[in-house]
Length: 193
Image 1 (cartoon, rainbow, N blue to C red):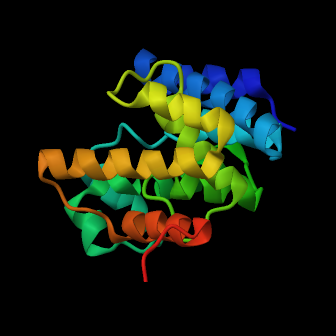
Image 2: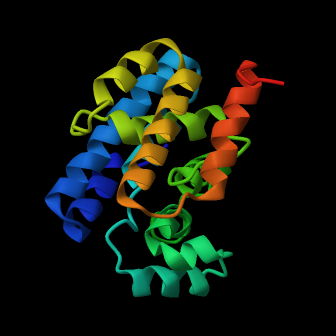
């Protein structure tokens, strides 16, 4: 489906070593989760390899690339341009690596804040990004345990952790993340009337 070695060489030359290790860790984790939860392992691996290709851009560069690609930029994108690295990365995956599969491109695009209607691949990439072996945050072990049992429970835990972190550092909560979290709760019947 794709030339992984070519992609790895190109990525290793254009980003810091730690970011490259993260991409490989996410790719491997996403592939395992795809096997476990019935998604295409090759698509998951490729999405994992490419998900953060725009992650190290400055705020100005991120906004410039978003404008050049005619991506919609909300007030949250202007306030926190880093959140645009998913959509900008999807454009780069298409333009620089010839990725045309809409499932892969969408997973890359939504891995930063999620969406209300996440596909299985979207969920897998989102979770893999938070639990890959190089991650060391406070709740990572709990998330890893959930991820082998219940993908939606792991995803919910990832959203909870992201929201707690945003509150801790005093930054804006992206409303799409809140809506995505609520969509999981509704789908699981976990709400009060």
